[in-house]
Length: 105
Image (tube, rainbow, N blue to C red; front, side):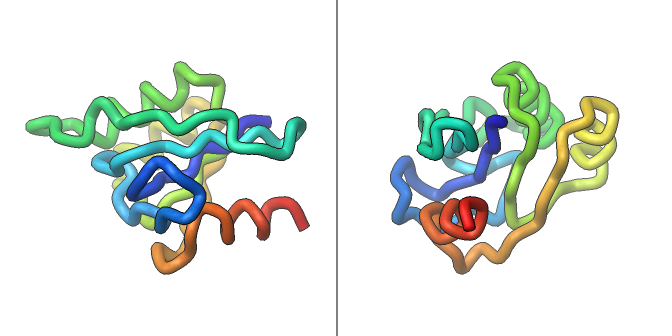
């Protein structure tokens, strides 16, 4: 399974980005390989409007099954529900590595 985690930077020591639609990066963690597969720059970070739905479509195109972020807007929640992508809200004080460690108990 691929899990996307919103990140402030493109490394495992970065903090979780509280903003889903305008996050800086998506860390893509592969649960089968037990590693970060890649860091994807968010192409919608500086969008004039509609960053949340556009970012949801971007994530869906990467075969992500679960997304972890600090918060999700109402439009994004309904998009993910339709796409059957699980959303998890997490504390933005945690690093990407801390979140991964919790996933791989």
